[in-house]
Image (cartoon, rainbow, N blue to C red):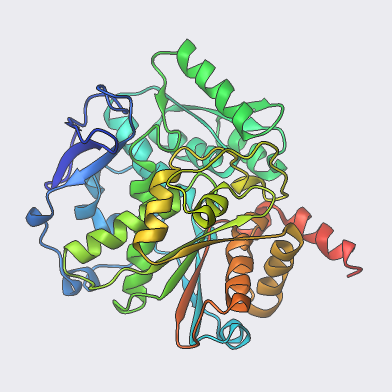
Length: 396
């Protein structure tokens, strides 16, 4: 496999072993998750160098990714807008509110970032098929990037996933397996499929080491778009947690390289009907307890048993951030308010981040001089019917 100069291999987050990139996707010693690791002393990257490059793709940060841009499976994902929202800032009583609009990625969600890196790895390893369980967006992105790489994709999707994302899995040529029940049922079906097909290459979050590597580029962009000023708070809608794990890694990397001095406060936003990270954070635990009966309209983040909860909780605590959960009705109202007053379209699940920031403001979390970033992980047109139904229920 062709890798970048500073890429040092895959490190187990549990036992600390370091392994070659051509080996297993999970730790061969203890079965733990693997994380790409780098020789940061070998990376010569400064602000002027980055600012001289076109703002055209996440691959402009190739020194901090496992694979060089020339070998990437890419559709120029990343390089999304960071939109100033002064009316929201005034309403929330802070200095600035910005929305990182990752719904502008090629398939309409932030999952394009991670799947670009994961499909690059799969392609370089000579895979013919990739597979994952998904709440929807990840499967659409996997199908798109697999098609671009000439690979077959197999997505296991809970029946409750949105019609649009399920349809687009097929439109991109993917094999879609609709599973009755919820995400955990889809994970079980995916694991059975993987066991039956030894040649399949996993692009499932935290089964592949590469999804959060793509996700971390969101934070690189936020900081650079703010002219290297670190925001006080960044709110992520949180289900599996790929975005937050990636953001924490990105922030520590920027500090390691001397590009910034501080870490942003990272906040996990969930729906009250499925908030295992919020419950664990509030209870001071190091890992979550699974939600027995998840119940939220925010299907993309309805993850009752997130596999990387210890890493998520570490990210929140080490950055001085937090966790917040809000009700479905408040989440839908937040999506509508952002659309009507700021012109930006958020699907219900990412609107949990907007609703969460409102809740944090009401609790007095902010002093008034903060810069707050809300990460919009998916375009509103993926679930426009849900948002319209909310309006109708309100008599609009």
